[in-house]
Amino acid sequence: MNFQRVFGTLPKTQASAPGRVNLLGEHTDYNEGFVLPTAIPQRTTVQIGPSSDDRHHFYSAEYDELINFSDDDTIPQKFVTYICGCLRLIEKEGYKIPPINLYITSNVPIGAGLSSSAALEIATLRGIRALLEIPLDDLRLAQIGQQVEIRYAGLNCGIMDQMASSLADTNTMLLIDTRSLKYRPVPFPAGTEILVIDSGESHNLAASGYNKRRAECEESARILGVKALRDIADPKAVAILPEPLRRRSRHVVTENNRVLKAVKSSAKRFGELMNASHASQRDDYEVSTPAVDALAAILQSIPGVFGARLTGGGFGGACVALVETGKANVIASEAIDRYQRAGYSGRILVPEVKLNS
Ligand code: GLA
Image (cartoon, rainbow, N blue to C red; front, side, top):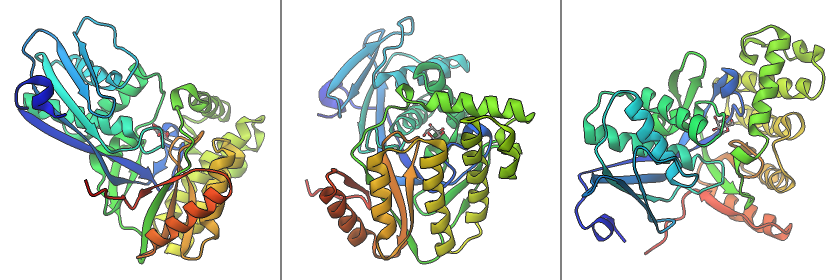
C-alpha cells in the first residue's frame, strides 16, 4: 500500500518524528522535575494531501485501516485518536484545517514504552504545520501533543515524550527541566552506547496505575506544602508522609537527584544510577513487573553493561541499558537468550534490526 493507492492522488507534504527512550528521570516530568531521554532510530511518518470530499481520511499502514472523520464527530478511541486530537487542537489555536487525506507508516514499537503515540502526534503536527505553513515552533508542538494525550487519550502525562520526539536526536541525550521547559543536549558518557530490549509485556498506560501515581504525587506535594515534588531535594523530607505516598515521593526525589548527578558522571557512575533507578521504580514507585525485573537483572549481570533499567511509563514495556561502545549487539543477543531461557519472550529494539526487504 502507499498514499497513491489508498487515495488516488499524490501527497502534498510529508513529515516524520522519532520514538524516544528515557535514560534516567522516570515519573519526574509531571512532578516538574528533570528527565534525560534520547531519540531512537525508529520513526513515524505521515504523508498529507487534500481530501476530495468534505471529510478527513486517515489510513494506517500498520493497522491496514482507513477511517474518516469530520470536525463535528466525536473522536474515536483508536489510532486516530491522536490524529483527530492534533487536528482539533490546531484548530483551537485558530488555524482552519481543510479536509485532508493522511497516510501513516511507523516502525516505532507500540506498547513498549518508547512513545509511539508521541511520535504519531509530533509527526502529524509537523505535517500540518508544513501543509498550512503555520508558525508554531517545536516546543509548542510538544505542548500541543501533550494536551492531545491528556484531553483525548485519557493519559494525564507529563511533557517528556513529546519534547523528546520533537526536539531530541539519536546522538545525544536531552536534559529537560520540565518546570521551565529549558532543555539542552548532553553527550552520552564517553565509551558508551545504548541498547533497548522489549520485555514482551505490552503496557497500556491509560488503563494502568499511571494516573493514580500522578495523583499520589500531587497529594504528597500538597501535604508537604510545595508546588511540586521537584521542590524537595532531600529524600528525608518525605518521612512525614503516610505510605504509599512516602515511597512514591522518595522515588521522585531520589530520581531527580540521579538525573542531576548523571549528567556530570562517568559511564560507571551513570550505570550505577540507572541500576538504582530501576530498584526505585520496582520497590518505591511499583511500576515494574516480574518480567521487566528479570530482564533488568539479566542485563545488569552481563559484563560490558554499565547499568540497566525499566524505561518509560512502566507496567510492562522495555529496558534500556548503557553498555561499552561496540558491544550492544552481542550483549543484547546474550540477554535475549538468557531471558528466553528464564521463560520469557523479548525482542531487541535498539540497535535497530534492519530487515532486508
Ligand atoms: C509516560 C508519560 C511521560 C512520563 C513517563 C514516565 O511515558 O507519557 O510523560 O511521565 O511515562 O517517566
